[in-house]
Amino acid sequence: MIVFLGITAMLLFTFGIAGVLLKRNPLVIFMSIELMLNAVNLGLMIISRTKGRVDAQVLTIFLITVAAAEVVIGLGIIVTLFSDRDDVDVDNINLLKG
Amino acid sequence: MTLTDILLVIMCIASLAGGGIVLFASNPVRSLLGLFLTSLSVGVIYLLLGGAFVAMAQIIVYAGAVLMLFLFVVRYFVKKLPQTRIQWQLPAGVLAVVILFLQVSVPLMGWFTKGKFAADYVPPDPAMLGQTIFEQYVYPFELISILLLVAIVGAIYMARGEMRSDDRGDEE
Image 1: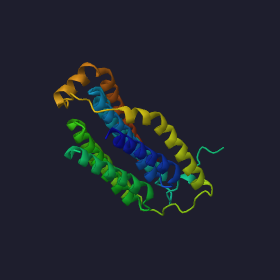
Image 2: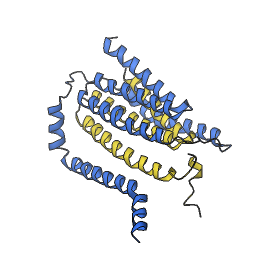
Image 3: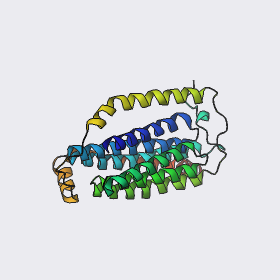
Image 4: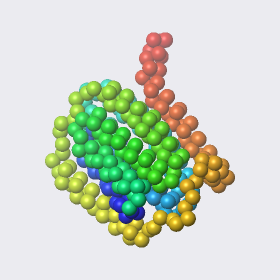
């Protein structure tokens, strides 16, 4: 059972990586980051269940909080970046290009 | 196989299906629904693993607040979706994904195959969880409160950026 749960967490993390690397829409890229955070939380909960410790659950709660703050800031940046453009494409964001 | 195991398997498959929808859907709203499915089923997995409080936090914060915020922004962006694609992006991305998956799975797989559920496991109740947070982990807890404050200030600053420059223009 542990193996099955572990494979689920790893595959979810890989889906997140694939979304970040292959998707073009900044919102979907951000969702993929959330997917990776979910996978890491799942791994922590598996550790909590196998070791029988409460520490991992505390860490999971902290991670959920950090993820919420991260979503607020990230979506704010995306809205600010794309509000004066007529398309959403990460490749058109080249403000730092020399 | 007990009932818990069967439910765990179903929820694992559901969360993987949600991840697949996020990855393969062409419409961002469908990706969002996939993320919703993943968040809910991961929350149920937490519940089955004995973390009732964490499961509630996951469902309220993720499936409730975060995804609602995502939905607002997705519907706010009724814009043309990106069409172009760098030619070598797909093969290079797939190669990188395979390599990264191996890097994640090879070290962890041994641990997961050897690991067993703790025999005398008592699911921690919220009181025990709160005691651990406020006795052992007070310092990270306070740090997170500062982080949330910074996030609030930053979000308000970014949301007000354009409005403020307009106000100045009117005054002058």
